[in-house]
Amino acid sequence: MNSVTIREIIRGLDLEVLHLPEKEIRIHNDELIRPGLQLSGYFDMFAYERIQIFGKTESNYVETLDQNNKINRIDKIFSYPIPAAIVCSNMNIDSVMIYCAKKHDRPLLRTKDSTTKLISRLDNFLEAKLAPEITVHGVMVEVYGIGILLTGKSGIGKSETALELVKRGHRLVSDDAVIIKLKGNTLECTSPEITRHLLEIRGVGILDINHLYGVGSIRLRQKLNVVINLEEWDQNKDYDRLGFDEKHIQILGKNIRKMDVPVRTGRNIAMIVEVAAMSIRQKILGYNIEEEYNKRFENFNKNKKS
Image 1 (cartoon, rainbow, N blue to C red):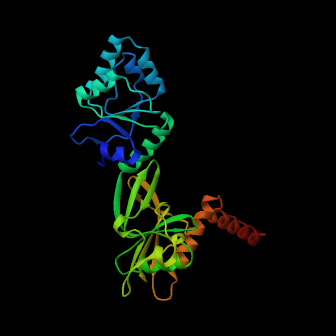
Image 2: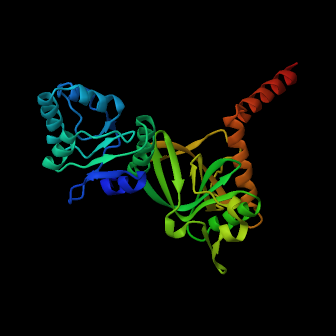
Image 3: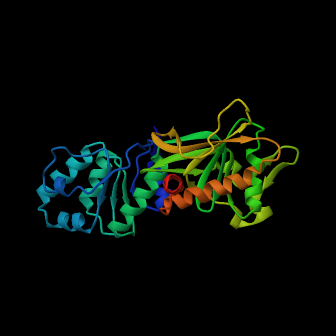
């Protein structure tokens, strides 16, 4: 399971530190909580494993409490192993909260961001860091806005196809190793930092696509729409000629359409990938060639009978 440290969150969101334990604290949960009920004294089912967000409402409510209740309730919140407490809107922090954070050695942080803005930024940050991910062998490209993962055995022509697509105005996401993350219901693909913007062509070497073709030829991340598997032409295999029987592959629990494209001398694979992308785009926009074909076939049969 992925995790993120409190120090990474502090750096990533530029948070002010009021108290930070020496020991490293790792977070595995991307959910947040505003502890309003706990400040009122209700601790049943307290989600202490989440980061505690103190907005203006919570901070102002603390000021209304008498000293005895304030100490008891804040001390009880910090007595749980909370990963961190963050105070928003640069609000003044009650001395009791600082004392309890130090007493129980819990991270106490502050931000200039409003509560809504902090929650949005923190949600995005945690989702990016904690999202389930795998790394697969292949080449990821964006063609006409469609995210295509090219797979196949080494030497089949994945990188050469990607280079031709870049020359045609499309964009490279990653070559050789593709990181796939599950974000919500979407699979997002990106490149390892060490190979970002790079493309390896056998006999030529490593190419920096960004420098050769400009920033319009690369993309940092892209939603995955289809997997196109390149394989050597097998005359004994029955390849799909109509495209009506869709195949799917499971990646991180999500069904992704898969197309097997045979490779042999004379086939323009880059053009085939372009056409596949346009076909998928048509379908997304509401045009279904299978329905259109069936209508034509029915009309043909009717006319033939009459």
